[in-house]
Each structure stands twice: as C-alpha cells, then as structure tokens.
Length: 124
Image: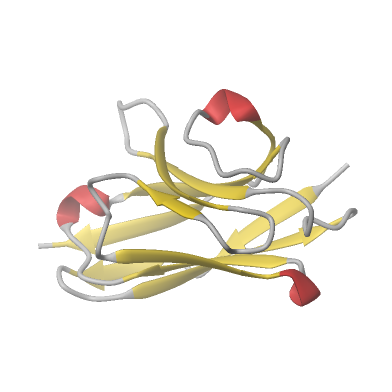
C-alpha cells in the first residue's frame, strides 16, 4: 500500500509559477514510474506528465510541454511538478499517481495509487 500526499497548490496570477510536490509513504516508489494528472470542474481527468522510475524518461501532454517539468528524488520518495507560465486553463485539481510499471504512461488506467489532489487556481 502506498500513500501519496500532494502539496504546493494555490492561487497564482497568469504567467506565474508553482511547484507541486508528491510525497509517498508506505512503500518505495523508486522502481515505479510516476505521473501527474489534473481534473477541472465538469471535465474528465487528464494526463499532464509522467516520469520513469529513474527519471531518465519523461512524457508531457502537448498542452503543458515547454512550461511544466516533472522530476523525482527517489532518496526522498518524492515527485515534483514545476509549473511555469501558468494559464487560466491550467486551473484544476492536480493528482499524482504511481504507475504499475517503471515506464511512464499517459493512460490513467495504468496507475494504481492516487493522492487526494491539490488545487491550482490561475487567475487572469
């Protein structure tokens, strides 16, 4: 069993930056890929970014490519999402999740453990 706790969300103006953290406990995440997803009101949960078990491979949604950076520190059992150039359309609850394999994937069905989410609100 893995417990994931996201933090770092908040209210920011358009163009600003936030850094989300996802701290894992209960089991090491060092052998699993990790992902970030988001869900806006009235919309389905969508893929944002994913990182392989060792950080050597990353995948991004087209909508965040060049603005967001996913990283991980396996020694701290933590994954990060650096978000720069935030836009109002980035407003959502952001979730981190553990993949069942070491490879980063975009399908939410590939992930088994999820955090409770952290709210990100970008004002125009």
